[in-house]
Length: 114
Length: 110
Image (cartoon, rainbow over all chains, first blue to last red; front, side, top):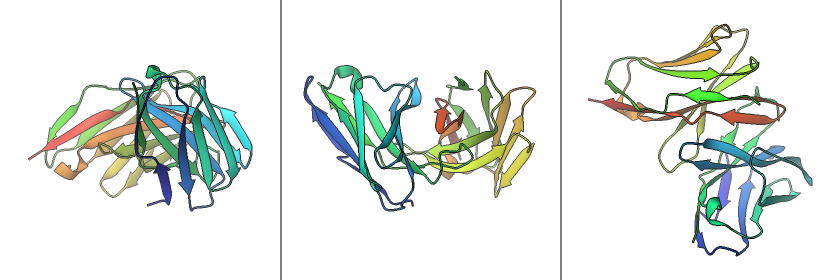
């Protein structure tokens, strides 16, 4: 298995509070991604990073921010959590941003916003 | 942007039979198409990638086809086993962004 960990694995938080999810990799892959997965929608890309301090938006980026200060860590922040952000969040890594390269996924974080 | 459609209804088949899952895409014809497996409570795991100039790709009991005329990829599992029960996702995209289908759940029974 690719060396990807996510923390926390489960979190319950209240509406309006800030939340930060962490993704850590030991593979030294350049590309890192944050997805959310919801019933009926599948996996949707939130943000991705193509290097330290280099990030870009995905399909559903509103309400989320990211940071990557080290190759191995990619943080996803919900500045003020809302109930619509209740979801399962997956981090993924890839050697390359080309779609000919597979992505390796972490175990996921289940976030509940009450 | 690309849209991926997979049958949202679960596919139930008997052990030993061949399971066939469908992935349809709209808009442009992708250069690559990927298939992933996802078990409950876990992240997706990459299975196979097929290029647009490849009609077929095999890996052990898995076979993927890519028909650019029909805008469709088929994913086959031959001699299916209960351990093959999972949700299977197809994905494609451009410029570093993969678009995933919602997945089809496969249930293999004895």
